[in-house]
Image (cartoon, rainbow, N blue to C red; front, top):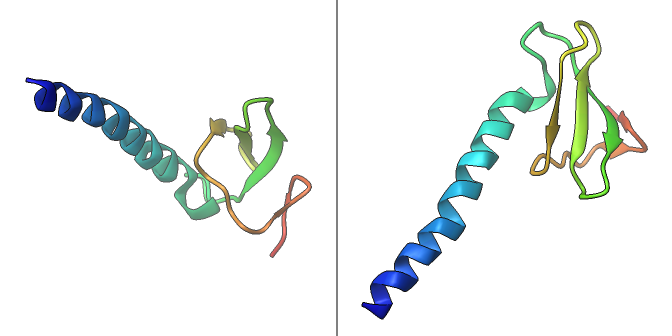
Length: 78
């Protein structure tokens, strides 16, 4: 019974973050919005989440898992 409870607890701790990561990665789309323009990193909140907005259409989202290596003070360095 204890093993079952531990397995369920482990699933509750691992599965939801995995699906959140996949959803954010799909939204980020390798740095491009659905309209074809680049995402611009515009803000970092107090919890460490990153704000992204489209350079062309203005769409945006917040992400806690996406951390491109080429972010430098809010700009994406090519």
